[in-house]
Length: 195
Image (cartoon, rainbow, N blue to C red; front, side):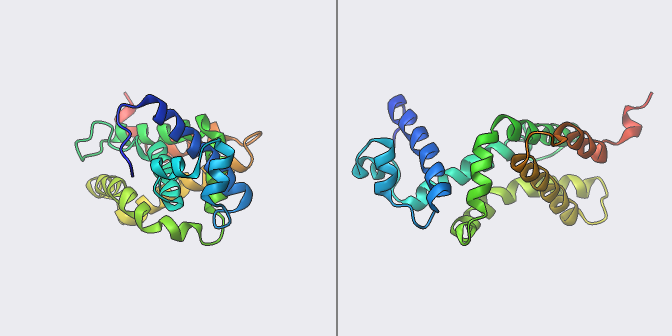
């Protein structure tokens, strides 16, 4: 990818391109979308588009990286490689907050994910990005004496993803706050908080 360091105009253009590309990927299908279609809707040349993003696949990977960033940045906020209970609870709260604050983005992102063959385009890269975050959570569960830390980590990630998807599909009337509290209650060790 062409470097665009310290260029606010290019940064804004890249953000606009990503937003429009995501909309087009959902509307017309990822595999049917061309660079010319994206460039046309953005109002730039295809050459300019591909000077900022080398390929359509690079656009997809950047969108996926943004989703991962929004969801998993709350893991290990002090970046010491260790998770404390308060940090796990922070991550859960941050996950819910990110989905609520970025509802339109996640509505489009989940729609894109559900298109046949799209996940295969970024599965390997996603694994590389998410695995270190999940490993930190797994180490926490191991330290806490959880019977199967790997399964508990997968359960938590699947539960959060499922709740997020249901909320995104039906945001009005979905009990998101109650779901968040229920998940938090599952991981609060009550004896530490009792007087």
